[in-house]
Length: 156
Image (tube, rainbow, N blue to C red; front, side):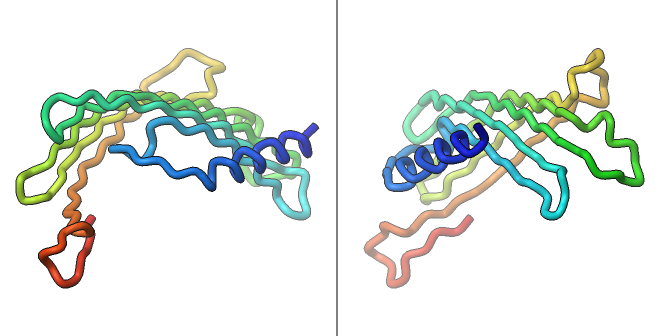
């Protein structure tokens, strides 16, 4: 069964790898599956991850982006470790994303994103330790298509 699953994901990766798309964001929709066995051991790690982002145009070159992400991480731990690994069988990570990006007349694009997160085994009631807040800001100066300069560049 595992070989069929791996073959399926390799075929999907092969098909998607040769496609080309253009979008305002790099990730509008994404599905991932990872399987990492530990060499010389029975331990393994696998993760399923899916995300969706939806850009909403607010004005010319300005977007509000809302979305979400879910990850299920499963550990199969058979070896002995110097810590208690019994609670490490599954971890669920749920993110909600709100971002805003806009472009200035000078060519610079600015953006910011805030992501409240729940990271829990979901075996017990969610506590404050399970709640996190992530965020980020960025600036991009893209001159790759500017014909008036000698050496086009893109500054992140």
